[in-house]
Each structure stands twice: as structure tokens, then as C-alpha cells.
Length: 421
Image (tube, rainbow, N blue to C red):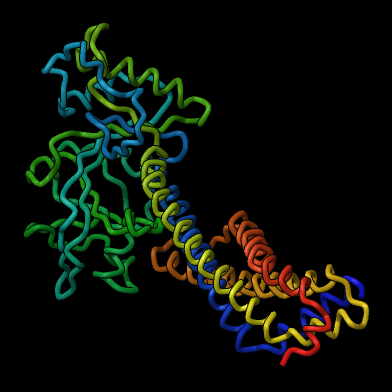
């Protein structure tokens, strides 16, 4: 009896027991589907977050008075030395307008510099009888804000220095806002007045769509001048400075120069620590991706627990199969079959069932994960490394679950087996 004969016999047995095979395959497929589905969704979200947060490009960075997002990963390298007294005047010191404008004037590195002030993120925008949901974010910027933050204009014009200095009620609206208020005629929004917080604003531009993720709605935004946001009193307390270097190879030099210039602007002594934070454009994406890693670990745990249950179920089914096919085993031995042929047949059955479960689980997991990713406006992805890992894991599950039943079947006495009723 050859290896091919054992495989063919195992395959026919699997095919002939459709109900038993289907139930076992479904159990294994559910575990792999949970694992692959969650991993696929997380990878899509990771990519979407990188694209969304890295709006300034790899050659951009921001200067703020403190970290905008922080994830404590146990790294003690950034902890404050408690033996050293910090000057209270240097702690949590907002970036004032004169400091931001002073930096912009003194920073001579070949780069674009933008000053911005965040407004509230819960505006409801009105135009005639149309209105948006009360979740539109309003940001104040300058004439360089669009370029530094990766926006481009579809219709209209950019903010001018005169708009910024006067703080007049003009704005640029994101693609989502324009679509909500003007429908398919969003290109007609330019030169129309919309109502923001009870005040009329003249729309001077509609921005091209950047694409949005669930955590950063880049197109659900209204941009005006930072002086307008400051004048209305609905903005933050600290300004943010954005810098876009001309080339990615110049980023480190740009950061060093910015650190030196801004320390001078804030009148820090050589012995003083920095009381501001410089964050590269992909820092926020990396922070959120690190947060998502815990979800990925949970996905692995869910998949592992389900696969352990599937392995136990598969082993029980194979043991039942041994009892049901005792006479068949005796007949194979009676016509010259060896113990290894019996073991091979049962191991093949177990692995075939496991791999069928892996196949269905992987396909369903990729489909479900990408459906979830599409709902979050993330891209299509296939986690090939986890697909291969799923196949290997299921092969291992099949082997482990089939070893005991295979050994038990191979040890059956052929005469006793033939008499089994």
C-alpha cells in the first residue's frame, strides 16, 4: 500500500462523511476567520492611519508645546530626572502668537513654515436649508497651511497674507462639507456665504478630497485664518508650527535648526530643557498603530483559543471515526497493510480537514476584514504573512489532533477488528 493509496483512501473517506467533515471544517474555519479577519482589518487601519496622519509627507514635522498624543510603552528614557528641579516657568508653556510669528521670521532653513491654531471640532455648518452633522472641525492657518498639511485646492483660491492679518470671515471647506451642503454642485460653493457658529463666512475655496479614516476626518474640515479663530475665541490656547523641508534628506538638519531657533525665541538658557516638542509627521500614526497592537494580540488570543477548541473537536471526531471503521482497519491489515499505512491514512484525513478549514477561514477572514476596512475608508489588503501562518498552524493542528487516533487505529489487532460489530 503506497503513500498515494493512503492519501486517496483518506480523501474518499473525508468526502463521504460530509456532515462530520463540514462541522469540523466550520469550527476550524471560524478560528482562522477570526484571526485573519481582525488582522486584515487592523493592517488596513494601520495603512489608513499612516496615510491620514502623514499629511505633511515624510519631510514634515510640527512644533507644539507638548506631545499631542502619548502612549506609555514603559520606556523610561523620556522620564524626568526627579533629582533635578525644573523651572516652573518652562513647564506647560503655551506657544504664543508672537513666538510662532517670531520663529517664522527667524527660521532661514530652506523649508515652508506654517502657523496654525486648532478650533473646536463640533461645528454644524449651514447653507440655506442644508446643514452638516455637528462634527465639522475648524482649523486656523496661514497662506502656507495647505501646502504644509498636504491639502490642495479644487476650486477657488488660497488664503492670502491679507486674509491672515485681518482675520476676516473667509474660509476654505473640505470635500465632505462641500458635498453635504452643495451636493453634486460643490464646485459652485465658491463665493457663497455659509453659516458657522452663527456668523456668515465667505467660501473662497473647495479643497480636493484627501480621503478619510474613522479616526481622522481630513475632508470634514473648514479652514480659516488663525487670526480669525483667535478673534472668535473658539480656538485652542497654544499655536502649532508646521515645517515642511524641501527634501526628505534635509529633515534632520531642519529639525536641528528649528530646535535651535525656537529655543532662542523662547529665551531658554543653554542649561534649560526644551519646553516644546518636535514631532515628525509619522509620529502620530506610529502612536496609534502601537495602540492597535493590543487589539492584534487579542485577535491572536481569540484565534488560538478557537483553534485549540477545534483541535480537541477534531481529535474527538477522529477517535469516533476509529471506532466506526474498526472493521475497515482490520480488513486493510488482513490484505497486507502495515501500521504506518493506517497511521498515514488517519493523519491525512485529519490534515485534509484542517486545511479545508484553513482555506475557508482565510477567504472569509480576508473578505470580512476588508469589508470592515472599507467602512473605515481604508485600503484593501491581504496579510500574506498571517495567511501563510494560518496554513502552517492548521497543518500543525491537523497533525496533533490526528496522532492519537492514528496510533490507536494502527495498534488494532486485525482479527479482533474483523470481528468487530
